[in-house]
Every structure is written in structure tokens, then in C-alpha cells.
Length: 182
Image (tube, rainbow, N blue to C red):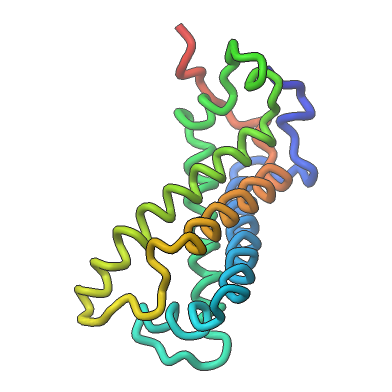
């Protein structure tokens, strides 16, 4: 499946804190990329809509701060998930498909980030945000719940998260079973 260099990150942050650092940094950078994309489409989403979700005044960089904090938390969730035995085992599993068998851990983590970004989009802005807004007695404001910009932004977040995570966290020392093996 992969060579040793496929499992070793560019920075080699390994051990028990590798996923934590990789997830936090990847989530922050991914959120910044997503925020820049939103800023290009509609700056009010970052500046006004995100703070309004929490009942905050859209003052200064509050929206950016909240958005980056969301990204860091979600990056930590991603890092924790992909280093747990079932998912890490699937990422490391040898497959008989020619194309997939030639991919290394880096590309598989980028793919996992893409899937994670899609899941975050489907769960948070599409399902949770409308319920949250109704519960606190407000609306989702100017937040583009199911807009294509939101989907593309979340996918961008996931891909950037996967790339940064793959280049910062060393998963070679992480034990994992092979969940798809007989």
C-alpha cells in the first residue's frame, strides 16, 4: 500500500500530541481559507451573520475570531477521528483497486478531509443552524445555509485541513488494526 515516507509527515509531529497540533493548525488554516472564500462572495457572512448566530454584535473581527475558533474545534475533531483505530485502519488498509492501492497516506488524509468537510456542511449549517436559530428565537440571518458557496467553502475547509494535517501529524507510530482484513 504505502511506503514509509507516505506515513511520515513533513514536520514529523508524532506521539500523542501529533493529531492535536495537526488538527488545530489544519482547522485554523482551513477556516481561514474558507473565510476568505466567503469574504469574496459576501463579506457580511463573516462580519455579521456569524456573530449573530451567538447573539454577538458584529464589531471588528468578532466574526473572524468565531469562524477561526470553529475551524480549530472542528480540526481537533477531525484529528481525533482519523487517529482512532477504525478510521485509521481504513485509511491504512491495502485495497485491490489499482488507483487506490497507489495512493499514500497523504492523499487518503486529503480525501478524508474532503469527506469531513462535506459531513460538516451537511450537519452544521444545513441541519443544526436552522434548529439553533429557531431555539434562540432568531433566524439564521444572512448565513447561506444550503448555498453552493457554503458547500464549496466547507469542502475547501476539509481539503485544506487534510493537507495541513497530513503534513504536520506523523501517523507512522499510531497503532491501528486492519478493520477490513479477514
